[in-house]
Each structure stands twice: as C-alpha cells, then as structure tokens.
Length: 590
Image (cartoon, rainbow, N blue to C red; front, side, top):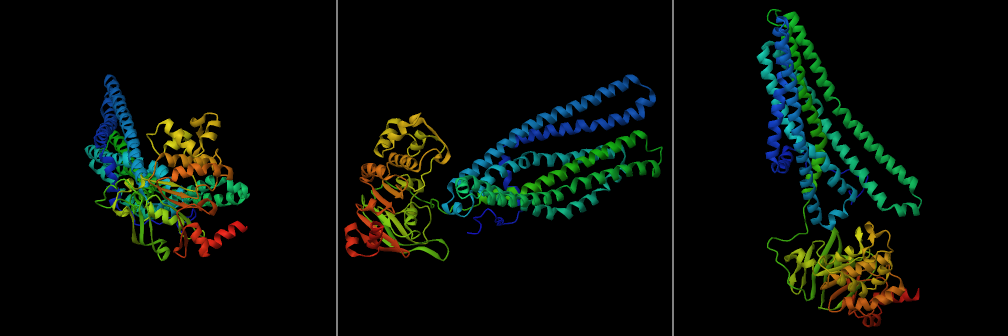
C-alpha cells in the first residue's frame, strides 16, 4: 500500500478537536491530588512574589522620604523573605510535577505498547516500523510535559493574571486600564497565526516520522546496502529527508517565534504608556513615583503570564500533532480479536476443516477463493506450489492472524472465530522461514516457547532437533548472549534454536513454513529423526520448496490459481502427472 513507505506523509483520519484534549485528561486524573498540591504551592509562590512591588511602593512613597532607616531594613528583609518563599514553593512544585510527568509518560507508553501487541499483522504490513516506533518513544516524550505541567501552568498563569489585576486595581484603577488596553491587540495576533502554526507542526510531525522510518529501514538493511554498494544513494535519500525535515522545522519555528516578540513589544508599549499617561496626562498629585514604579512592575508581571500562556499555546500547538498521532494509534481497531462471548478452546485433537474459505489482503484481490478441504488429526500435510499462490496464507488463516472474507475454519468441529485467540494459538506451534531471535541468552530464546520450562527440558528439546551440539561448543553454552535478530548466529543455527523453541511448547498443531531452508543437507539429514519426533501425534502443515523433504507426508496439496488444484500422496500425484509431477521432475532434472 502507498502508506507503507518512508517518503509518504501520513494523513490524519480526523481533525484535532478539544475532545482529544478532554480524552487526555484521563491520564492526568490519576494524579490529580499531586497536581492540586502543586497548584496550591504555585499559588502561594505567585502571591509571595506579587507582594514585592507593594513593599517597594511603600518604601519609595513613605519610608525613604521619612528617612526611617530601621523600617527600610525591615522592608528589605520582608522583600527577601517573599522572594525566598516564592522560590522555595516553586522548586517543590517543580519536583512534584517532574514525577507526575514521568508517571504520565509511563502510562501512555504502556497503553500504546499493550495496544500494539494486539494489532493484526495487516497493521504492520501497511506501515514502516520506524513510523510506529517514533510514536511510542518520541511523541510520548513530547506530550508528557504538556499533559502535566502544561495544564497546571495554564491554570496558574490565569490565576497570576487575576492576582496581578487585583493588585494593580488596588494601586491605581486608571493606570490598570492602560495596562489592559494591549489585550485586544494580543488576541488579534494569536488569531492570525493559530491555524498556520498547527498545520506547520503537523508537517514537522510527518517529516520526522518519515526520517525515522528510513533510518530504521537503513539500519535493518545495512548488510544489503554494503553488498550492493548503495551507501552513496542512501546518503542522498537521507539527505533529502533531512532537508525536508529541516525546512518544515524552520517553517514551523518561524510561526512559533512570531508570538513572543509580539507580546514583548506590546508589553513595552504598555509600560511606555504608563509613564506617558502617569506623568503627562494624570495629575502628579494623584500619581506618585512609587505608584508609577509599582504599576510598571505589575505591568511587566501582567504581561509575563500572557507571554507564558503564549509559550504554552506554542507548546500546545507543537504537541497537538503528536497527541493526534498517539490517539490515532490507540484508536486503530483490533480487527483480529476475541468476539464477545468467545470461549476457551478445549484441548485440540487436530481435526481441521476449511469450508468455502475466501480471503484477500486487499479488497478486490482475492488470494484464495472458495477453498475447502479436511485434515484428520495426526496427519501431515505438505503445501506446495508457485511463490505467492497462497501457501503461507492458508496457515496464517488457520492461526487467525487475519480474518476471513467468507467461509469458516473449524478445529475439532469448533469455528476458530468463536474461541479465544490465546486458547487457539497456545496449542499451535509455528516455525517460520525467518527465525526471529531475541536479544538475551540462547536459553531464554528457547524458553520463549514455554516460560516455566526447566533447563533439563530445554536441553532435551535441543538434543531432539540437533541444536545441543553447536550450543555446547559455544563459550558459555546455553547462557551465551545473542544479539537482536541473532546477528552472531548462522541462519541454520537460528532455525535449529527456533525448532527447539517450538518443540518445547508441545503444540497440538504444527506449522513449518520453509523451516529447514537455511539448514545444510548434512544437518537436515540428522534433523529428520528429530522432525519425525516433532511431527509424531500432531496435525502438521509443512511448506517446502525442496520437495524431497515432504515425500513422506500423508497428503500433498498443490496450491495455485487461488485454490488447491491437486491433493493426494506423493505416489498418487506422481501417477497423475499433473502440476505436482511437473514441479517434482523439474527439480530433480535440474
């Protein structure tokens, strides 16, 4: 699909509205007690700070003219005390909100990861993994401060404005109106840049996502890059994506940086107006030097919360795009999930039936059409046919990694769509061609199939699939540390570890999808006895291109033309001289 590219911008499915912000409050609600305490401390800090201009006014208008030196020292001490109280309360509040911010990060990231674990394969098929990763890491970090300190600060700055207005009107009503005269101009400025600013930061979000997606893809495919000497071409692509990100960032920051100079200039104009009105228009008898000094200080203080609010607004606009992406991910439907009333599947015997199954990855492009077949418990079924015919699709549908378009699949007579996914998949073992190895020890990788397995059980499973020999030759044996994706292991070693992991889980239904493709011929011969042990008493599906490995299967199904064109034992299909016969003979003649 088009969106599964690093150079395609993602389109938001719904525009942002305040319901998104309201929804985010659930993450703050959990910590409301701490946030209330922080708000109370902030209010006390603000009030303490606002007492300073009153103390200064009294000193200029009364204490200094009267020459009262002892009182001046007392007022100086009070001024220092108010500043100390303000700083102390602010620091305590800051520590509280730092903890709350990290708690909110933890909660959002936990919800995101839990939801990603449930999303169907289709979601990951349609998106570069780097674009998913950036949402869980970068975007959550970006919005955490907005959801913790942001809300507290908005409330606090509005309270600050209220307190400052009370103090201003207490000092001089007329000059207070001069200070407030700058507000209409500020509102006009904010309305002019709001819409453009949001769009600009959405574009930054897109370009950042694209850059991260390509970086992740490049790191994963670095071996192929070096094999085909694509370094310079990749550097060129990365440079173009970086330039687009840089350009979008500068464009967005340009809008953000328009706010504070406007507020600063309005603040300067207002303070100049205080001097002009106070000294030139109003009577000197009613406007003292202390009054002008106090009002100038309050005017500066009044526009500071407005500047802070504009910065918070900037921060809000900047992070809204990230918040939208987070909620878009959380709203991604879990299309493959337990139905309401789904029940636990009983212990599987292994009778499987496909009944008129039709499936398409994309609308209008069916991979399978009206497929029907039955498999008895304990039978081994080989799926063969050309690449892309639908072999892996059949076993994916059996595991309910995708939903059917029509028809149904039953195991022991139970429709698999009516049972819980856990009870179904926990009784199945799936070996893929690309055997994924997690970072950690070899022991932990094998134990992934059965978390409560003992070391003895792990070693026994490894011996059955011929993995024990090469594991013991390693420096630390089963405790050998392996990197993500098993970069220090050969392809065959990774597959043998995966075989041991699957055997340890003791599945009732086994799927081997090109499971021996990376194993050399000698190891494969040794593994055959282990495979017989693995297949014994289990219903199994084996996908293999090397037809010599599936000759002894109970049934061989040739998958082609959106269905199963032939079905029978090796001898039956060879005698029929159809598609399977031609495929088998072409392999042995080549």
